[in-house]
Amino acid sequence: MLLVYTHNITPRLKYIFKHICIRILGVEVSFTTKIEEFIAHDGIKISYTKQQLGNEFYIKSHDILFEQGLNDIDINVQNWGHTKCFFHNGDKSAIPFDVFAASFYLLSRYEEYLPHVKDHYGRFVATESVAYKHGFLHQPVVDIWANKFKEALQLQFPEHTFLQRKYSVKPIIDVPSPYHYKLKGFMRSFGGIVKDVFQFKFRNLYNRFMVIFSLKHDPYDTFKYIINRQKQSKYKFLFFFLLGDFSTYDKGINPNKKKFVSLIKHVADYCEVGLKTSFFAIDDFAIMKKEKLKMEEIINTDLKASRQSFSKLNLPESYRNLIELEILEDYTMGYVNQIGFRAGTCTPFLFYDLDYEIQTPLKIHSYHLMDYVLLKIHSLLDKKKALNEVISEVKQVNGEFIPIFHNYTFSEIERWKGFKELFNIILESGNED
Image (cartoon, rainbow, N blue to C red; front, side):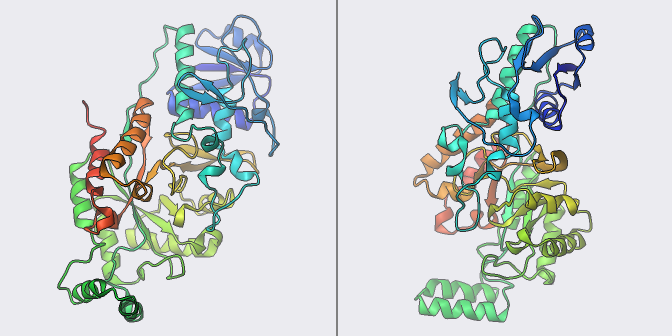
């Protein structure tokens, strides 16, 4: 048990200490404001306050964990070993930066509440983040800082043994549309035919007719391949199916179609299944509730996980809606166009509501790579290099690597050539050397 002495036990302080100590380092933690209790404790202990008491393990605290609401915070990023950090706290501190305050800033997504430029979908973009601007987006800095804190503790308390985490992978399969041509209905199929003719896409037109008349396999229907990979993998895949109505943004299949329902049920026999909420459900609680109930009706169990269309988040409203619907996990936190760690971590964390100043029960699984970002890298060799670099970063801190692939990523479509091999690299990355 790690005892933390501080001058004020706030919800923010308890939240971030529990995340770093319990979830990353595997150490139980308790708090006190009584000096006598702190002195009497014979286990590992630290003081986290403005002034050191004596010769104890001391980290000088930044104000952010003792504030409420949002304030203008000066972020001065500096080098720290092979990584970077901010909230420098002087030479007297056992660690020269307040890693708890900095971790809270990143995990709470403090910067996403502040004024920023959004993209045309209304999303927070990587280039607006402190991590991108200061060159540490590629590192899970919260986990790196936690390990530096652990190393400093071990020097002071060599008799204490820390638990060792294991690297793991959580493969995500996003399914905005399970089929390219099948189950689209007469009007959509007819519209597609007309479009192919006017754009002189005669090969596409030929393939469309071959699939519709069951003479050829639908190119997006890769579920047999994915399920076979699941059977051979020790990691449980998590599928997200879109059930929302057809719209400008979402081009899925009608969830009332029996063949689509059968597909979801079949996948759920082998893999975990969550809900990919439609674009308009993000801002409309009634639509989100309808989609959740429909998915629960299909999988015949409570829905545990969700992912928002286009990786769009409106903080804190998006997460509050999920909490009200009793959805326990979300996989939206990440960047579509950048490889890296949006929340600075590869450890799942609970959402902290900065407006209400409470830790919520919603667990955030931040993803670190989406297949689309690899399309921007031309050669397969360079794609492998970029993939192995992010895997290496997660492995160094024994975190959980979360990549997002789509069902059509495994198709024979030219642009996705080589992606099966990339997926296999991910699945094999957890095998012991």
